[in-house]
Length: 250
Image (cartoon, rainbow, N blue to C red):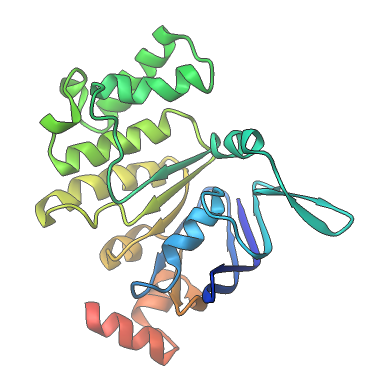
């Protein structure tokens, strides 16, 4: 589903990504772990072209993201084409990014109606089914301010899934939550994974990575240091940098 080849990203003189190679198979869950500032969130944003990358190639489902290649040269695609690519990639951020002036149900139905041209009735039915799935059908007419952080994040996940994406990106979806609310969000993500959704997750929740991920990728200083099955990377890390990071968390 994702193929990254030597992806590089600079902010001025600061090299944030220094040649990322990564493969995420369809229907799998990949967790990106690593210290703050290692480039995890930047890489995630490159996957749906919220950030332009400076070198390399990034493909989602076989399609080059953000650029067209002509005679070996990359040309940035139009904003309209980029928006079409993004419509197939769901993204859930640290901060929930719900529209504060719209109810929960309106937050979820807005994009399917406006972008995918779904009928309002069909979008409403789908939104209610998704709210049922995340345990929030009773909050359909509430406004975001009336919800806890965990409830807002579950609505944000439902909103992303309503677009029927082929890929879901999660950027530390539990980092802004109180500890007692983390579990309810991870449970929703776990159900998504069980349904076969391809997911790329930036997380500090090592227990979640161990339990749900098919692949764990440890990043530091803009490079992939180590990757493999959770039991390999988390329980038997080979690299000193990975060992030091995990020992600080576990």
